[in-house]
Image (cartoon, rainbow, N blue to C red; front, side, top):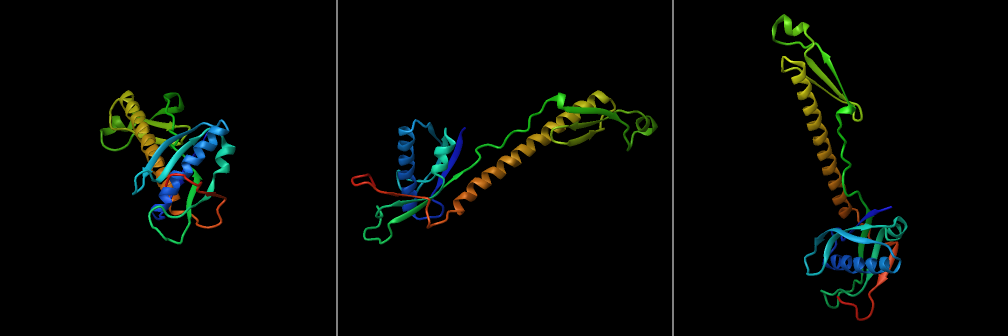
Length: 205
């Protein structure tokens, strides 16, 4: 199974963005040793060159991703502020959804029935079943089209409206997932990390 893991510096200082870059590199090397496929799906650059506010990774092993999930701590002196006392830089690593699942649309999933229509048009329009009521069974969406005098035209109109409604719903779901992903940036809990890494001597800063 594949997991999408987001590593984020949250609202931390520039050193946290530096830590994200270091941790991603460490994770990729660890994955290579274990034969786990890892790919960078997306990244938001930090203020300093070579740093990241966040990196979204696709990891080909759920157990490996779980071992990297939680608050991570990178221990090293600040590469930007000499003499700064703090040496613990925290990063959050959280699974997240990459895409909203699209609602499939097939006319075979739609029940269309002719119904009588009301409104203007005279007695003929009120008695004739020219309106079309379309029900999309998987989602439960129902639309009625009655603007045309022919059932076939109203049927086409009802199907088109269903497609538009489902597309709008998928777009709203995608926005909600994106908002949830960005919320992770604000959920970073500093302290009590699940894993702590110490900068190796001679490692780049």
